[in-house]
Length: 112
Length: 117
Image 1 (cartoon, helix red, strand yellow):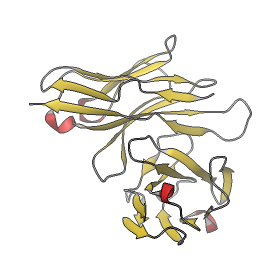
Image 2: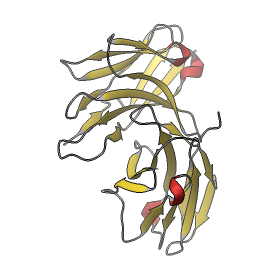
Image 3: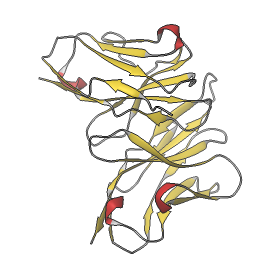
Image 4: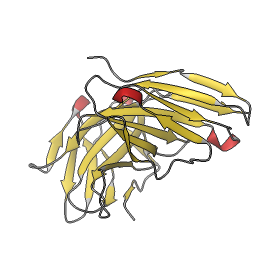
């Protein structure tokens, strides 16, 4: 079974630039999550999709972050414009119902 | 507020000794509980879960965890630590918010396990 795929693995951008991350979940997993993991901290949920609908985006900084999951499969997370404090690892995960979530390898974003 | 606490930033243990990584939680209802491990530059890898039933659950790589409902704890254990177990460990809880909506999956801040030869 293929795991959760994320790209790119690493990205360096200047502040105020925009960036996008892509995630392809495990086939058949209706729930997709984007987490932000700042160095030394646990993952923080940014947004959660059930199929192609958003079920939780309470911690997403909506003035600069956006995400979509067209057709209920793969997803894109965008930051525009980026700030220095957005430097983090962005993790995508998927799950089947309330079972365990499976994570991709993450995208390490550095904003300079 | 709903939360997961991992009270130790780091746990040090000698190879061959038993290890315990602690986790307590404060959430509504009957949560599902999980442990994940993270190696450098990798995503989180699922270790084990508690949903219902026996309070002692077994998982990957010889790890086990004990659920204690009265103490709202879910501590990770291993009888004999290996140097290769050195990594970052995260406790996670899935619960239904009192305010309704969909189930949430939240994580603790993580505990770094260092196993010394």
